[in-house]
Image (cartoon, rainbow, N blue to C red; front, side):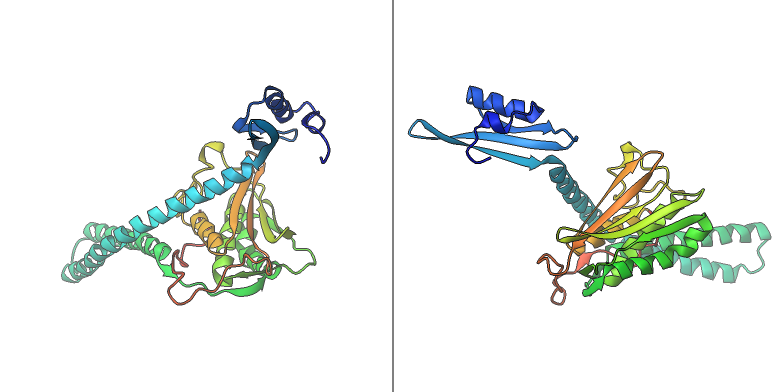
Length: 325
């Protein structure tokens, strides 16, 4: 572009080109105006003219990738929601746990005192007992999710970790008639992560994909290097995610499954963030969904760092129910 004027640079007749040429022609700036380029990407453009002693000496044009801005804003918003929910449910969980324990004790005492009760009454007591146990499991999962954990970071080849997850998911995949296909490539892809937490997070995503295909199909797992990051992709052939719920799938306890806990994807999202990574997805209704997990490549300078004792305690649990969204 050196040595050219604005008309030569933006002479392609595009939406953004026309707007910038018009701004140059009329000598008026642009304030954070959004445009769409030829391939459908959204771009935010601003233009300011630079003057010195009433003489125009140049112009400053800034172009921003609107999709990246939105993705970062969405991740920050989700993080804030999860943190707020974590603080709330942690307190509620502990408060509910105490009366549950008391009810269990007194129910057992009542059973001992009423050994000769009629079958109908015993059946009602059994139902009460089983429902209390179910409630206790739900509350325990809630407490586990919000319990702080200390990261145990190590240098891990994500191709091997992905293969381990594929093997762990294979029994469930076989029951669903799903074939897990892998593309790891030949280049080592090392990242500094907590292998146990990351493996559980990735397994949650994989099992979600498997369970999204009740009639079977192919589930693809792949890993590749993109710039200074490692990207793990999990792609299913399920029904896809409806547009009206896409901004909710990382919400704690949001689920579309009858037996789902709504913890799996929320847990996976937070784990990836703890590794200085990011997680997003794209989905086509009736075709399938692809989840993309990115973490800094070892040596990129952005790796997660081993925290000093208690310095990096985060609100994240390691006992979330695996595979349930």
